[in-house]
Image 1 (tube, helix red, strand yellow):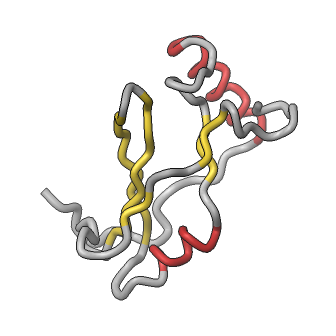
Image 2: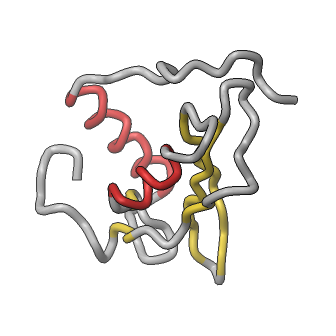
Length: 108
């Protein structure tokens, strides 16, 4: 059932400390990152912008997926009524970490 009046302001910014705790908790629960169990996935801004530029798009929905034994993310646009914009761009094939990880920082 679609959500009513999906807001383009959905989501909350968090502090670096909260991000560190959340990523550490993920590793504690799911084990160390591997090619089949990435802890992060990077997507290019051009692809994200293509989704956001679709008519009626006010946000993104990120689905968990599984393909050939590997965890994946599937990104689709969302309209103001909370409907997925399945007739437009649907994004996959980001760069998973590992192997494409940021240089060591407090989140990574």
